Image (tube, rainbow, N blue to C red):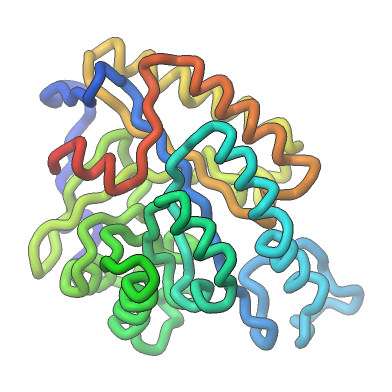
Length: 288
């Protein structure tokens, strides 16, 4: 199906009010992306251009740039999330579960939600067998958590024409790729509906730091401004909103950036009308 065949246009104005338990108005979920980058293929992203151009192999500086996140940045970030007592959602490559067992165990120990993020960090349109990739990711997560993942985030938000269909057929209940609303929405598939939980391209460290090249403090400023506006919207029509904060260990886990995530979380936690959830919590609270 074409995207417009999967979802009907429905403005947020005029919808039936949605309320969260405890009177909360904004459900905030923190999505930590953990990926395994192949050391023998072109890097998904780069921070350093080789002097003579081209695509070097091995690409040691760019592979190591990312690997720093899993060796150091994740653990630095973990201390911040622990201090705020936030139940994060781990969007993880299926292959990364075995490649980085301490990260897997740390997330399990904190009862984080695991969601699929592709078996490897590769554009889903370039995966040779998409169904197998989705199922392998599901099975890798189920093997360590004891349950199949409910959610899916495509690497780089990439999808094929069939991705939502294959997700439902593989047992997934929600997807995050369709960044088009502030409330959960339903997408049609050939096997029944799947729910889209609001994700973000704006409060996403990849967009801010690597694409738009903002200074590190932009993460705090943008997160605060976005939360304040969503809270105002929710108060105005007495209907809850969802806000995502997206982080990658190799980006926000860098020494000069981490404090701005900490400050953003401080601001949000001061509001009694905010509540922190996993994606599955939001799915269940909305009763979609």
